[in-house]
Each structure stands twice: as structure tokens, then as C-alpha cells.
Amino acid sequence: MPELSRPEPDGREVPPDDAAAVNALRSAVMRLSRRLKHQRVDESLSPTEMSVLGTLFRCGHATPGELARKEHVQPPSMTRIVAMLEAKGLVRLEPHPDDRRQKVVTQTEQAEAMLEESRRKRNAWLAELASGLDEDEWAKVRAAAPVLEKLAQL
Image (cartoon, rainbow, N blue to C red; front, side, top):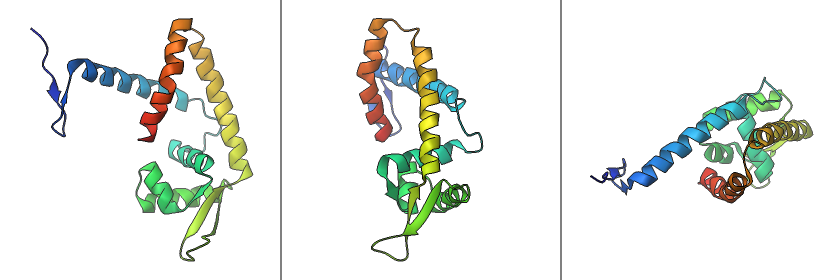
């Protein structure tokens, strides 16, 4: 007897094969993420603080409100995170060019160097882990990488 699709919380029907793929993807991403988090350069920074620095690296600068939206946290939480990063010398606050009530957050050279070292360490760890893949599996990883990046940005 064929398995019936299950309704999602929003009422959409998800075919069983898709539901199984989503489940496997979620599980794999969570396990890899947890293992990658252990490959940190600076243990004094939380994963959220590292994520904010990564966002600033990608976008250059942002207001605390913009960072809160990009990081999916409440603005008061982002204000606290930015204050901690500023106290550690990893970001600086500058006047907003158009709105004197706001500040613009920019990462410092110290943050850039730390992020580069963190990326290097995590990339080396992941490359070592992936060295156990055969060429066909590597080709699938290369093909999936842009799709996973797109999912991460949605």
C-alpha cells in the first residue's frame, strides 16, 4: 500500500519522498553544524556573535536593526550582542550617514583576521572529513553546495 503524503503545518501536502529528504537534510545539517561549531578559533565568542561577524563580513556594515532582521533575533538582543562585540574590539559603531538617531555597525580588522582564521580552520576540518568521499560523492557535494547556500539565505 503506497504511503500517503503528510500535511505540513501550513496545510500543504508533502510527498513521502520529499518528507524523507527534508528529514535527512535537517538531521545531516544539524550534525555537521554541531561538529563545525567545535572548530572555533575564539572560544570566548558565542555562535551568535560569530554569526553576526559573518553577516557583517558579507554585507560590510549594517544598523543594529538590519542585523537583527538578518540574524532573526529581536532588536534589543542585537543591541546587547553589538555592545559585547564592541567591548571586545570586534566592531565599531559609527554615525549613520542619513539618520543621526541610528548607528552603523562595522567590523574591525581584528574581527576580519579572526573570521579568516576561523574559516581556514573550519574549511581544513571539513576538507579532511570530505576526503573520505569518492569522486561521485564529491561531484554531488559540489552540485548541492549552491542549493544549500540558497536555502541558508531564504
